[in-house]
Length: 404
Image 1 (cartoon, helix red, strand yellow):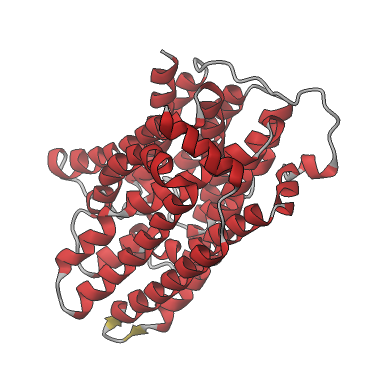
Image 2 (cartoon, rainbow, N blue to C red):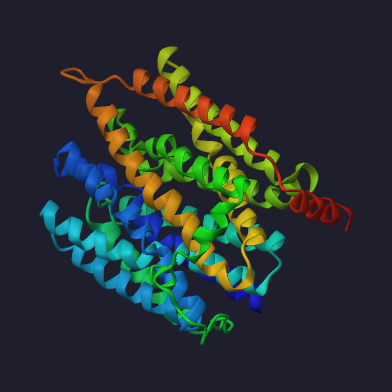
């Protein structure tokens, strides 16, 4: 029953977000929002991630994590309802910023809740239901387009759907197994107040390198994560959400391979495979445009799960193994602050600038955009391979796990 509740928690948590985030760039394009303002609105997610360590600290020291999660999801639902009622880009930014300040900490919080009740190696088996939730969010698009004959992608309707799922999650969260604050009663410092107690882990060279490359990897990652729906809109794709969700469908299989890969190859090689896949993704987009073979775009879409599962979920497992018990929630929040917070924020603006740089009267030069993104991804992959070394204790842990 515990595993079942944790699985449903993940399913709803990612469904409530994917249903409106995936087509957001296309919606902003239809609203004729400028490139800088579009980057700012899309960066509401990244700014929201910056609250993750603070929320992690609250769950570590003050309140049970499942109750914190329920409160966050309630605020998220209210803000999405507000976003659905406005077409003013400035008001929309405020709505989504508040929504994401509540929502984004939930990624690290749900991870911490799941790992508190499961061995970290089993985490991908529960996290895969987040991917299922992401994929099944596409059913809203099918219902509106096929059954109701109403446009869905690129409209305000996804906000209403996200709010509805979020409210369902609130009630489910209150039934989750109790996850009490392990550091309750301990003296708080200014660093703890900002949820940055896990910064002390940066004294470890390997951990510091992992954080650095996690941050840098989000710059090319943002081109797909934030702007791919705009690319699909430019090439006149009809079912934007469903097309992107093919990648998340494949992600389910890749996530189940994460523990297998860690046992066989170790965390370092598993994360390297994720960065190799990142390079392959953008090369497939580049090659597909240069030789006019649109089917190659699906290579980059379908290996999304390999990138996300092997590098980012693998990184969460690395964090869980490195952090002491009283810092686990903060540490999970810290990695989201670095990646989907600061990294995605920088990536969104740099990618927006790159897209604007290659905008012409005839449209966008996507071949050049994908080519540059490919080169950046390859450089990051090589840098990680050369500099990051797996810790001896983690290697030993993976070896023992493989013998079980």
